[in-house]
Image (cartoon, rainbow, N blue to C red; front, side, top):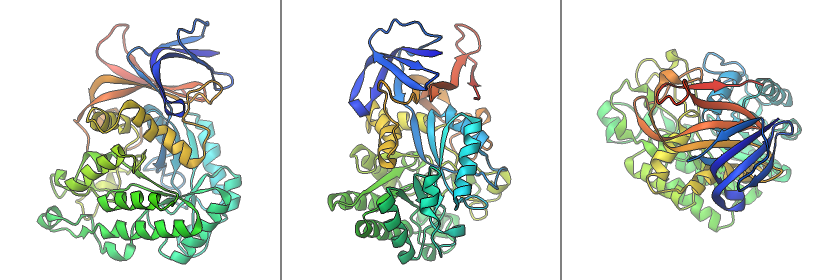
Length: 445
């Protein structure tokens, strides 16, 4: 079986390619057979990619699959569907489940279940400490043997600096990336949104930027001492971006990600005290910080766009900002928001979008992905930059829809996702030549 992608604009950072080319995929091996002009080989399936970008498959370094133990929020099957629809071919699943994924057996459980679903390559991140209690290191080498590529205590920070330093030393010696959620728990003090005039107007406790900044600084210095490869999750402040720039100048192996909500929204966008869909951690910061995130992406300081996809059941988001859970879903909207805000906004070109959403994550994690070249794994995202649509949460395929973008018009949409040579998502017309009524078609392995 073979798939021929015809007439698309191949945007491949690995080879600095940006030109009209055809791509022939061998479905049986899951690899790219050729990337050339005007391929005339016969194929079992032809995809017309005229007017579309052909990107290396998107890689999300920050996803909460909620499996095991929180399947009312999401599970590997439902969030894999959301990922495929969003153009993602690989996702990293965070370990703060119930129980936390802190053993080789836990890693194996997720990987085996994801393979049965067969829609996206799920790489489970291992917890840094047992039970995520911050007291005793996990079996990092044992988890690596099960295919783990990164460790994290996402959802909180390891507050004991000595334990984190020991973990970083082990990670450095084993070529494992450390993903850091930067949050000083002693400074949160019940905060539910950014400390600002808006939080004061609502009468709600605010979250200081120092909550994030102080731990980011600590972790950067620990990475410098240990030699670890450090990746800062969901960066939201101008100060963190500046710290990453300075640290890289000092030779520290540090990178950082920005989530679409942090470069599209700010705290002033929260309309009411009950607008819980705007509650996430780190919180939406000031307009100044929002703009600083866009500039840091433009300037190549923060080099990854991730989602921090965190589904919640409706009951979790009930009440107001003081009672609702932190978290926002993002897999199904990230590419469209990135294209609309950053590419059309002049902060990235299509090559930059491919770098931030595929090539850079692959490089940071040491994955043989993010490359549309002959012989490489056929993980491919086809993206129509001209397709304008309105985000509708009722149309989502993930288990829950907690996000504030309903009714927002965006330009650019994923039209097909290919993972290991198999089509996992397509966006097609209901009728030949039909102009309306687009629907989702998901194929399971």
